[in-house]
Image (cartoon, rainbow, N blue to C red; front, side, top):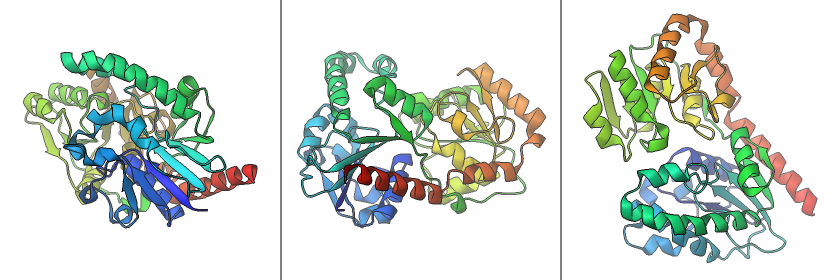
Length: 364
């Protein structure tokens, strides 16, 4: 079947783009459609495919301010001409599933998350916005919510990246979803027999990931924390971090892998829909100290590959770190890596192939 993959935007290589890369291995002749594309920011595998962009690509500063064009994305998606495609896979985190397909085409949506800023985290985003932006958000996101619900009806089958996301799809779209966890390239990571005396946090520095909590907690403890990542909170974190905190900013994959292998444990204070970073840490043989909600509950085995803290607070993080240092001998590198292997690339490939084949047989 002639296949199109619709991805929300291609301006970096984060978890969603790693899923896209795995889908391209399964469908090597697929064409890619996206709102905004930065050739320099994606992998060679993605760059070697035909990538078609929306009119948003040509708007001012689109590669940097793409999220400001969110209200135009429903219109932009509907301008893609997908009449030649038998199979359409939308990769949804920002708007992607709203494309128009042939009546006899099969449309499968791999949903990383229903858009947080439209649904459960709307009030958090609104509270953090400036006065003018907050004034505009109220009517615009109301319109976006109506479109998002309507566009969900254009999908033939939903795949969720976790049970947590599947429950949100049921809540907001009133649709059932099959859970297929994202792929993790476990074999690309390695472990170290002698971890160094530092804890690690890796990820985009945006509000919901709560790097500020981790930094404040480690400020109080005086323990070493290395933070790898870039984002809107970086300048604020630089102002509050004490000397025991190292803010490295954005780093290449090799540097990240090295720090995964050598840290005492990964600190994961945000609530994620799946959270690929904890699995990558476990693939490096390192335990995870995570907020006990969302996708982390599906990837981390408490007491065997990590520990949970129950509140997003400095005190709760401190208590969890102290508990970890008392009981860390119960967590082995082997157990962490074995748990990570349950999310490997081969498993994802097999489950996606089986799902698509079954969906095709139902419409044959």
